[in-house]
Image 1: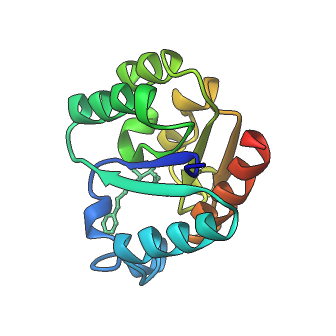
Image 2 (image 1 turned 180 degrees about the vertical axis):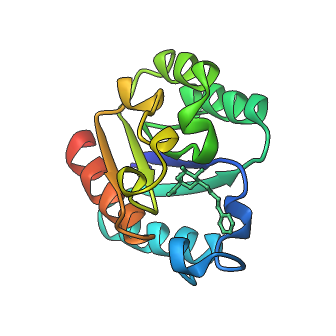
Length: 146
Ligand code: CA2
């Protein structure tokens, strides 16, 4: 049997992970996130595919693709977390579980980061655990898909 697929979607500027602002986002790169998630998923009988885009419409289209390709979505919408009804609407058209991840603790930061449109759809939210949050989300997804 083929392993259930989790799509791990990442929003704007996360391609710069590990290159700037390590005091907020750590020194690891998005390639490290991809490896971490793939290794964890393999141990749990799951598969992962990681995507990143700096464009809101492309993220909406990634979510549409996940409707036919993924059993669950882990998403860090980055700045679009705080602005995007379009991403929320797309997630509402996805049938499986959705987990929201933030590398930093958004609640310890500026007030505009305290509200998330995506949280209205997410089964759970992880914030402030660095890139370990993605690993924890894969583990939680295994339970939700179990
Ligand atoms: O903490 C998170 O994961 C965020 O989703 C990251 C977003 C931010 O707008 C959210 O409020 C919280 C920003 C991602 C920017 O990523 C960078 C990584 C390295 C260097 C510069 C930006």
